[in-house]
Structures are given as C-alpha cells and as structure tokens.
Amino acid sequence: MKRPDLAKLSSALVLMMVVTCPALAAPPSAASATAVFAGGCFWCIEADFEKLPGVLDVESGYTGGHVPDPDYEQVSAGGTGHAEAVRVRYDPARVSYAAATRLLLETHRPDGEGPPVLRHG
Image 1: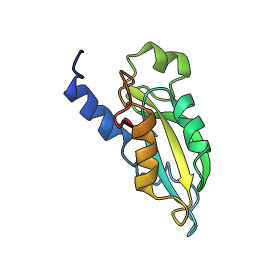
Image 2 (image 1 turned 90 degrees about the vertical axis):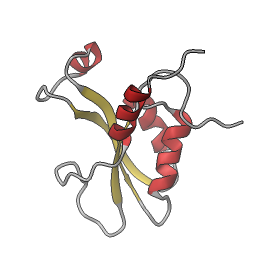
Image 3 (image 1 turned 30 degrees about the vertical axis):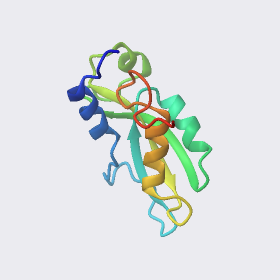
Image 4 (image 1 turned 180 degrees about the vertical axis):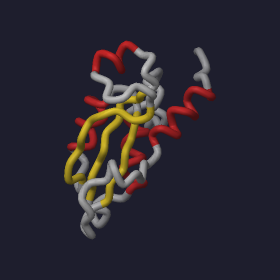
C-alpha cells in the first residue's frame, strides 16, 4: 500500500482548518458561527454538511490561490493554487466545531487522495 505524502496531507489539513476572515464570515449572529473547510470536491463536502443537524447553510467556493476570481474550469485544471472549500454556518448550541471537523475527517481526505483520514472499524 502506498503511503500518503505527509507534506501534502499536512498542507491540506491546514487548508481544512477554520478560516476567521471577516470578509468570509456570515452576518454576525449570536446564534451562529462560521467555519471554512477544504477537502477535495466541494460538492461532496457540501452534501454531507447539509445533512448535519445544526448546520444552517453551506456555500461552496474556493480558498487560497493566486488567480483572482477563478472559475471552476480554471481551478479544476490546476495551476491557480486554489482549493475547493465550503463555508458552513452552524448553530454552536446544536453542533460543535469539533463535531463538524470530525464529520469532514470521517468522510473525506483533505488532499482528495485515498480513504478518509478517520475510518470506522
């Protein structure tokens, strides 16, 4: 079995961590918090978070990169430096950031290669 490239995986894990940039944050609300997660295909990640109780909304987009306002084809082709990501607005009284992170790690691998980081069994 091929071992994962730990440098690539650790870079992907850093991308997956919460982004606290005011420009990305949803309108302030005492009843919600916002996190940004990256991990391969944003359509798959979006679908999983939409099913998580306590998640208020999920929006797909890109994070990082050096090309302003790239489109899907540019990012998919590579070379822009962007990662597909989702912005998740959630009710912290119903779901924790730790639970959201666990969902991502149980269902996806941030570098898009191989099985999820956390596997059951």
